[in-house]
Image (cartoon, one colour):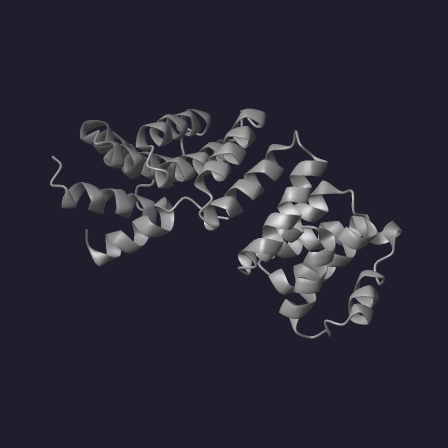
Length: 239
């Protein structure tokens, strides 16, 4: 595989890997660096966001996570979790922000709380499963991601994440099955087709792999994903 194709496939085919509140608060203070880690500093931080402002702060924190401003998201969400400790979404977004900054223990703690508070919400299980993948807890990751896929039957993302965990666990056939489900849910996604082709290659199903690369190329003709599919086919000298 050429360096160009390898880089593109790694970016698109490495299916994304992704606490107790007091621990999360303390670690957040240390990570942010602009506040002291003293008990007084922590109390001051969590006391600055009244409960009546929690909903607005949660929306702000979620937006900051989506925008990639993780330090500011943590600042905002620490206060939300302290003032509104039973809201699963606050723990979820705080956990995601920690995970994106590499604070995996804090991320697992917060996402574990999110699952405990909202056990039927697939998003919470998906978030925890992704972090468990990051730390190499493959069996636990598969369990959480299977739960997410079961609770969210119409969301292809959960099946994509589960497929990634299954590939990491050496279950290429299981990954293929989940990615085929995702492709049925989102048939015009070139990215899912590329991921499915990757899983089929791992499973040794070359003919089916070729068909998926061709379909990805058709769906993403003229774009970067179409170029990835074209390069993959060329390098395997597939007619």
